[in-house]
Image (cartoon, rainbow, N blue to C red; front, side, top):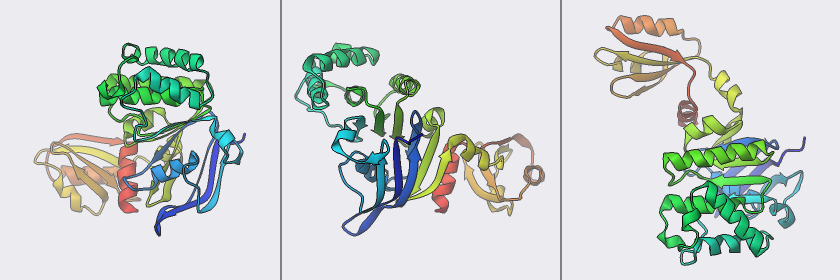
Length: 299
């Protein structure tokens, strides 16, 4: 099946500084994909090339199996990190205008906006000016604008910014519904907990290069079970310098350690017992956040 979007060796520089460096990945249709990385890694630069704001200096970018074109971009919905709403206009006027830009009639744009606003508890705010809304409410309006015209490919840059837990769950539920309807979704976020709940696959980039990519389940399986949470009387700082430990993080009452290749969890348990009473010792699969910190730290 033709992927919704495919990048092959894409490179982009600004004033001699490489923002995206020979980046390659593909997103199958109907998948939720996470584009991850630390601040300044090149995520937004990559997204802007996908929506035609900039073009690659090298490499190829194909959308729905074809070279990027304005006609193809009509099938894409884009939620930028920076809001693009007119603050002195009412919410419904903003949404109607943005819907018309996507080819909807005024009546269809209003109907679709009201339906989505009802889902996201924005219905009572449609006649208010955007500047009167909270940051989280403005984010909901921007999300509604992204979905007008029923795009096949939805791209979102930090979609959970400014949202409280209830609003985050509302957005998450809508993303799952979109996936079930066959839509492809890409989002870039620092919310690793949401990535783990939603994404089928990810690409982690650092300094413009892909440092980890693939199906989320496979990535976590490859990380193995060499991660331990431990709580000891007197603390676990002694493990920081253990030859068995690859990385160590202390959280006051407990510590998280990642073991070196070949190290046995029983060895770290024996070393801990020798230093005092063990209150908790748990061997577990690392979270995506822990994988992120370890990979980015090393690269």
